[in-house]
Length: 365
Ligand code: PMP
Image 1 (cartoon, helix red, strand yellow):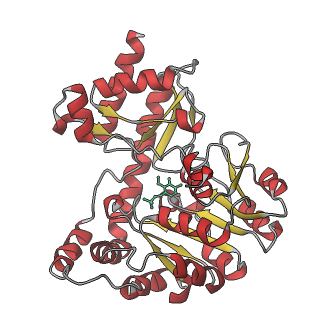
Image 2 (tube, rainbow, N blue to C red; image 1 turned 135 degrees about the vertical axis):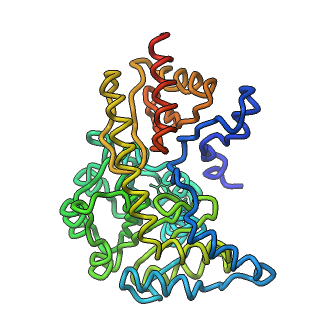
């Protein structure tokens, strides 16, 4: 196989609960997982009901074009169906973009401390990663613009960003879009958009209408609580979606996921509940970090990046102690942040268990 494939370090997800229970001899039911930015409320009831109905039809292939789900997205976001690409998670959309637009050796721009799938998707097609140093743990859009070379084909921007939780205001993104060459596709990854406070929300769909080189990606994995079903979508003008459609797998989104997504996208009460729970949990976690004198990056997502020590062994060490106490969080050494841990915001009682464990570990140190 190609050298650029052999050079890839595989994606590392959050440790599964069953694995941690086995490894540390713990009762599975007592383990708290705050590692993968999942929704602590789990699957919305509306989606469970939709899946129960869809289950009787699993002998048939899914709708390859996702007609009903696209109609739901059209109604919600006001874009024609031809502007929508469904994905097996929004990761699928990110990878399709790399496959559709990047040839071996061509450049892909993204920020330091940004989502781990950007380098993976780049390497998988033999692209050349152009990693732009972060400012205050977030994107430096001016530097990203300056980093674009004549052979750059793609830019990835996560807003809010994972794993740091930083946020770019609308005006900054708009100024960037105005200046990016039309030959460069910009992927605006809005996986955590639904957690933004109303006053921070912005209209990225209006930008899609204005910029033929913009692809906005969204997911049902976070605020909508459907991570295990693997479903996300991209919105762009047909010049982009037509190409993504040519290379996607014919049935990349299964029937259960389509049914559940339709229900979840219409479940505004669930979304509201998730957002409220998240902002309460953010206060709970950051208040504890302040009490413990731990530096954290102010977050606009459903997770917080916290610095747990001043040496490069700190993240791994505290992570191991947390695991022993049945708390799974995310070490971020692979992101070049070995002194930090990323904590997904959970239910109040889950956050409390994490905080108590962290306090006891730091007190013993
Ligand atoms: N983008 C960002 C910034 C993310 O953090 C994630 C999830 N970790 C994704 C995309 C992909 O999520 P999914 O494939 O579940 O939609």
